[in-house]
Length: 170
Image (cartoon, rainbow, N blue to C red):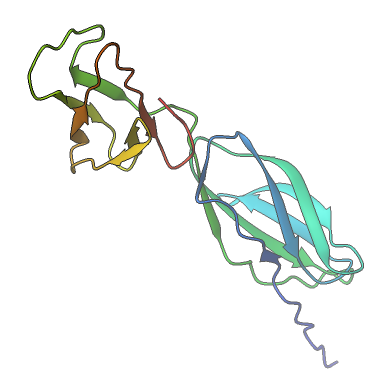
């Protein structure tokens, strides 16, 4: 008997953010209409969903693990033919706000210099976005930063915000 292998296309997963601070994520994609789509998280099967008549499928609240998550999918048609694995999506799950330390000036410091400026010194994690009163500040390869801040008479509020790629803020 001559058996012909039916080729079904691997599912296509819609892009996901590179990093998230949410423990659960919604996954969307496209596969052969009516096929059973098996979803894998870092090589482990986590769920099955059926592609609708248009080939669309979705999985709500896929639970991520802290750190690196690799998401793939495979389609199986009604006759049991399996597709190859989909392209791999990688999502970092990080729920910890970045470290942030201000070494100078101390809170509630009174400045009486003539220049009307102070140096703000501190340290945070590398690969964060740092802003001081909504001005972008460059961080060196060790996470150190230095920013000259213009003072006005009276109380000056200085808002230092470190935001990591998953959206966590300190």
